[in-house]
Image (tube, helix red, strand yellow):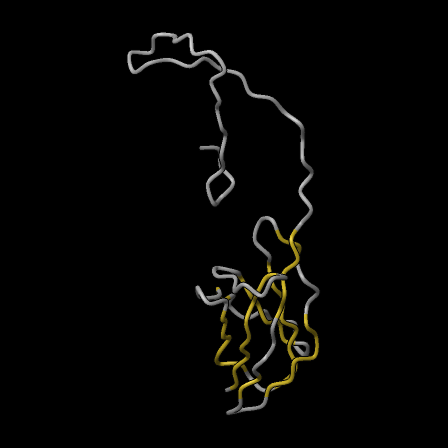
Length: 129
């Protein structure tokens, strides 16, 4: 049996965890059980019969699917390493918007605070805080 392994990164070289990778036999068309990358972006598809495979990545939200790697050759008892992929971010259109609201105290009573500044921020996932 043989193994295909590699790493998935983004265009900045940051490893991408929890990305699905699949190998499909070029001879039979049989698809192997998909595997997921670890937190360091590494994946390993073990227990492959000798032959040629197409390796495909299903990119997570915010990234484009990279082109499959075709003709990855594996031989019994050997490992094909370095079958790496780099994910490219999907362009996200920016929509102009506005926010409005009212400054209140802890009892939800309106407070007349002249020139109050309010800042909207996003957490790491992009959600409004």
